[in-house]
Length: 243
Image 1 (cartoon, rainbow, N blue to C red):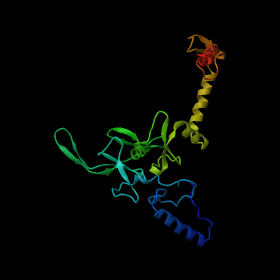
Image 2: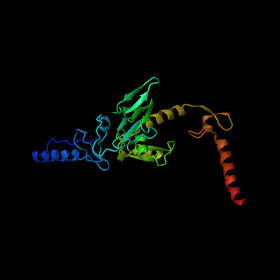
Image 3: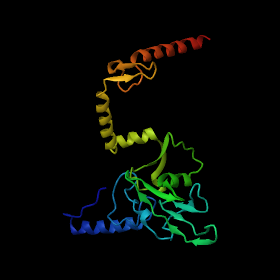
Image 4: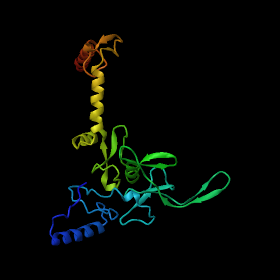
């Protein structure tokens, strides 16, 4: 995050900056956050603000805040387009009697990788996913190939305007370009060093224990078996059009 420094500026510029910051922070548009106390960040694309909204415990709706039923938790939990989650007031049975549970804003937990999760009915839920899918329940989503990506890559900024469906591979490419995955580079280097220490491997095709020189890097099939497979695959492609 880049903060504006007022050191060295003239008195007029300082006054202008203060007025501008008040005007921008008072506008509670989808790309601003009145609960963010530092000076506004001037940045291309989505503003680097909003990551603190989820901490606001007030039950009153924030300006421009919209609530919908949380996907899979209709009538129990609701999520907002500003990234907040609340449990609804309701009667709950304990087997012998019923007790009234007050409406309240759910606390969100910041996990080690920077994402926010929230326990709903004893299950830890990915906040970004449940917010986007609750507002876009008709959008096709394959969790094996896709993810709910943060557009500004700030993982605790779960405003709806900052979320979109993206392929996992493309999201990783963006992370790599922005140098947001240093741990992967470290793990890959460690795995490579461990691999280079190997002297023998068992081929998954012929089940023979061969020296590492008979394998291409990272392959579990020996060169001989891969050569046979490539030849068989080529013949199948060549014969098929003639039939």
